[in-house]
Structure formats: structure tokens, C-alpha cells
View 1 (spheres, one colour):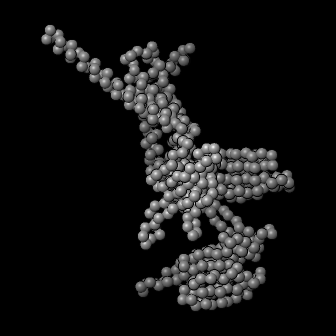
View 2 (spheres, one colour):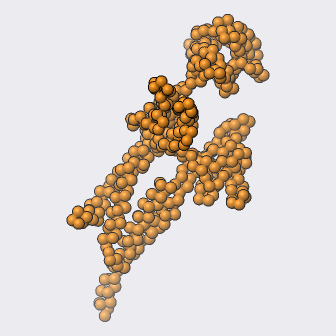
View 3 (cartoon, helix red, strand yellow):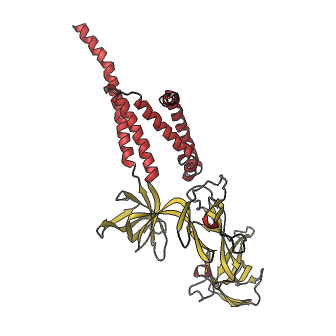
Length: 474
């Protein structure tokens, strides 16, 4: 039992307490610097959610508990000492409960619809096979940390990971029945201001007939439309239509409402489409007669902060029947793909972890107020209905300064998504802290223990003085 005795002496030593408190102070200092210089996820990865930080807190708790037990058998004079140590232990325990069972996520609710799912910032890969569904957490990693490929069941492999990724859209030739013509255009403008030399600006866009989302694009005041009906609005706009696989026609309406038309007999790279606008040139960069959209991801320009985009992964599917490597594709947050596996479909998705609440919330109406004469929002709020049990619901208002507390969950009005003709999606920040009352209780007990300690200490100092006074007067 000699080694247990040594361990016990180490746990109750003052030197261990000093080392642990110093290490904890340095860790919190480093975390604060990381959070201010980079962002909160970076500080969580290197400090708050790191195994060494958890071990540091565990050792601190064992040290405090061992010191308290070392005073056994306890006496009345130990009450302030034990009370303060109990408060610290409750604070540590409450923090553990919050980390283990707490919830901090986002909820998107469409106007007129109900929602029960909360998305938390914990990316994961989900695989659906004909027999089962399996979930594999893929924790966020800072850009400076190297990623090792992760092998998943059914021959699926996560080969590459980008902590902050920007999508790059393109269109590739395809024999799919859904394949449609795709056209990449480059718009170049030249303008002279105040006698200065002309300044050039260019922008490249893709147009695709396979989806309404890709049929048109807004370039400043000008609208570009591919196929379908011509725009029924004042200019400037350009309407482009394929006559055949190698021929297109176009019609343009300028800002001065001057109309021009033209035909391109052979579509090829560097072909120029002339809308008749001064200082504007349109050039065909690429043309794919039968194309399907393709998305890749590259490291984002913004890697840290609240404006940084989410992560993306590159996944390789199961091997082909002939033994060759499986299909390789990029997946952004919320994307889903399907692979062939033995004649059956294997679905894979990448997205945030979703937690179902024990009740639902319905967004009845989203209210948005703007500053007079401006499109800048001044305030916004949501009128919601929440379950109150037995099939009943209650109406509540959630605004920027008035959160909703409901069945242990707190809903904050975080943001919204613009819709037409008015915003239709409200975004709430959802928080649940089951360890909050434990931490509050620990704080109260700790303060009581400290005050009690100084009160007892003050009485001890005053007692000899009173006794000496009585002796002199006696």
C-alpha cells in the first residue's frame, strides 16, 4: 500500500494545488488569446474540449476532494473550509453536466411550419444502407491541423477535410437523361471616370437549362436569362436561347430601353455576344451541350471568425464491381450522395448533428421593422406557438431582447433569412444548460464558505482583546 500512500500525499499537497491552479490560469489565458485572435471553435479545439484540459479539471477536483477528506474527522472549526471546497466541487460538477448533457445550437423555422430539430456544431457523416443507418462523428479541426483519411464501413473513405471551404461550381459533360446545355460567360466592362484612364472589371458566370436556379443571374443592374420567356421588365437585361446544339439567339434591352437582337451560328470558346451596349463585352468561355452541375471545394478566403464558411469533405465511395477505385466527390455541409454497392444504393450525407426536442415550435409570423427610408433592419421578432402538453399550444413572442424559456430550453432571436416578398425563415439560438442550477448552488456555497471563514477569523482575533480588557478592569 506504499504507492497508495504516496499518491494520497501528492493529492493533498499544497504544491500540487499551486501547479494545477497555475496550469489552469495559463490554459485560460491561452484560450482567451486564441478566441480573440482566431475564433471560438479554435479555442475549443486546443483548450476547452481538449483531453488534457479535462484531465486538468479532474486532477483539480481530486486535489480539492482529497484535501477535504484529509481533515477527517471533521470538527466545527472545519465548516468554512469544507463549505468552500464543496462549492468548488459543485462548480466543477455542474460544468461537467453542462458539457456532457447541455445543448447549444440553432433552429430554422419556416413561417407557417413546425420544427422540432436543433442543429449543433458537431459535423458527422451518416451512411444509409438497405439494412441499417450508421452515424460517424467528424469533429471540426482548425486549418493548421493536418487531417488523416478516415475509413468508414462499406468501403467509404473520407480522404480530405477542409475546415473552412468555399464552393467552386462548374458543369461537366454527362450522358444523364437530366443533362442540359450549360454556358459559361465572361462579362467585361470598361469605364472612364473624371478624365481618368478606363478601369476594367470582369465577372464569369454559368447558365444552365436544367434548373430555374441556374437559368438566370443578376450582374449588378443587368439580368441575364437563359431560355424560357423573355423578361417582362425594363432593362437592362439579356435573353439567350439555344436554337440547336451549335446555334443560339439573343435579345438585349439596354438601360435606355434600346433593344438589339443577334444570332450566333457556331458556339465556341472566345465567341463574342454583342448586346450593343457601350463598354460592355460578353465572351463565351465554355460551352457544354449536355452537362450536369459539378461542385468542388477549395480553402476559403476567410478561415476564422463568424464570417468563415462551414467545412467540407471529399469522400471516396465503395469500389466498383471491376475492382477499381470508387467515385470521388466533394460534399459540403448538408450535402447527400448515393453510391452503388452490390446492386443496391448506399446513401452518404455530411452535415451537422441534429437533436430532436421533446416539443415542437411553429412560426406563425415573422415581424421585421426597418429604419425609415432604408432597407437596414432596426428590429425583428417572431410570433410562435409551442406545445404545452395534451395537444394544446400556447402563443409566445420571441424578440431580440426577449428570449423564450420553455421546458428548460431558452430560445433567442438570432437572425433570419430573406424571402420574397418578405422574410419567411426565422433562426433561433437554442440553449439548454442542465448544470446551471448546480453551478449557481456551488457559487453560493463557495461565497458562503469564504464569508464564514473571514467571520470566524475575525472573532478569533477579537476574543483575546475582550479577555484582556476584562482582566484589566477586573
